[in-house]
Amino acid sequence: MNTHSQMINGLDKDQMMTTIAAIQQQPGLARFQFRARNRWVSGGENRSTIQDFYGAGQEDDSRAQPFHFTNGEPPVLLGANEGANPVEYLLHALAGCVTTTLVLHAAARGIRIRALSTELEGDIDLHGLLGLDDGVPAGYEQITIRMKVDADCSDQELEDLMGYARQHSPVCNTVCRPVPVRLERVV
Amino acid sequence: MNTHSQMINGLDKDQMMTTIAAIQQQPGLARFQFRARNRWVSGGENRSTIQDFYGAGQEDDSRAQPFHFTNGEPPVLLGANEGANPVEYLLHALAGCVTTTLVLHAAARGIRIRALSTELEGDIDLHGLLGLDDGVPAGYEQITIRMKVDADCSDQELEDLMGYARQHSPVCNTVCRPVPVRLERVV
Image (cartoon, rainbow over all chains, first blue to last red; front, top):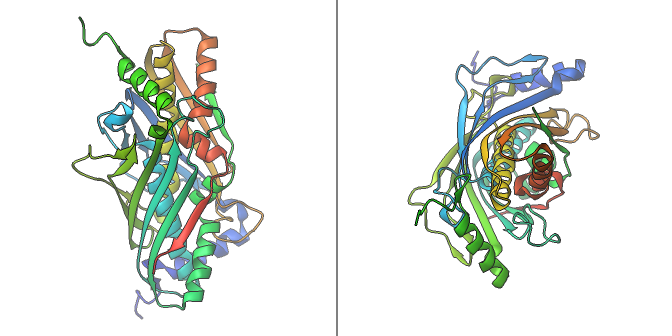
């Protein structure tokens, strides 16, 4: 028996199918809670720590060390490029999520992905952030993802897969749909 | 003359005021375009490069080196913790953006921030991602930000400032409001 026979697109198809069957039997296993802790440093610089999360019915303990990320701003936005800025990290999150969602559903359909890359552009008007014009939204006006995919399927199958990934990507859906954000003060 | 006299919350108040005056005179300076390039590695692992952007009327050239970020997934989501996952990066982006927006508008109001930290939680049901239930959104159901702030202002001023930051944060606004995302195939 070849233990690698079930790998497709770097994913273990047996584990995928087992996970889906488990969720279908016990829907609560699909409930996840992700978390981040952030501390302001100075100006536009602040740092996040990401480690624990809840999912599949328990607290995850798979990460021995936390991930650390630094937000910063470029000089034109009053910073010193201490890190990428928050709206750039959002593009990174979106790129990764649409990619992983596509690769996952390709695997479920038996489509092999040979290569996949994306370029993202997001347009923003700082009148919103600065409070200079209440008619201008503070966030992105629109975001464009240009995707190159090399896969062993027809053009039509690939178009279907891309549309499906766009609809089912958690970050893409969070951006496309209004998601409530509560900001609470801890005293 | 003390050259540090105009620094507040780590921001140069003179530069802030100059920027705002310039935008008021020439509104096109407020148009920014941020970008990311991402390449799939395998499974849930992919990597972004972030460097250039357009803003204040020109291509920015302040970054000699690009930023690199790796998305991954934990074992329970078929990965090997190659990096934080995309929905976790979104929380990092949101934390940083609300923080920077608050610190910026505090500076504009003459409020000094001594310390600021946040804890974020985002709830998600994987029935959406997996396409197991069309009634379940793929993205976050809601996100909660718990913020601790130590500032030299009254409770009421702080509550006002927090509400203003929530409304004017670009990432928070992108999450709270439906933002169009176009996914185009490049052949």
